[in-house]
Length: 201
Image (cartoon, rainbow, N blue to C red; front, side, top):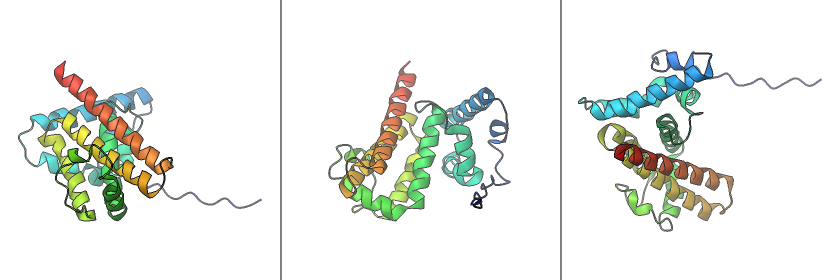
């Protein structure tokens, strides 16, 4: 009988991370979902009403202070068009850009001439280098506290669509990576439209 390969240890949530403790520690999935929705609501709606200019920076670095695994545990199962689901996708997008900025820059550059939404992604250097794209995605996420949340989601969706177009050019139109990025773009866009409808209701 062959010896099983040991599973890699799960990265623990940093000790300083307490924001999600009550949400992730529950046993009842309904309680976890409710806590996730409540946390997302406080983050998005609270940030918009706060006069503290540092709120945007705290939101930006939430994944680092709490751990992306903690955010995933609480928010990744939420519906794509919910506040929690939208936040999870925004943090996932930022984590990916920061983890592989050179690949992102290559894909964005390949896609921006073909994606019709490229003009929506303002503030990107020409050509868009790795550091410029990291700064851009940070500015998008910081916008949770500084701009309308629908605008944040639609801008992130446009960015993801440009990258999906770039992947179609560099890989092929049916690649799994292209399909994942296109789905992410569509989910963020749907969240942005849902947020617009909420604002107009």
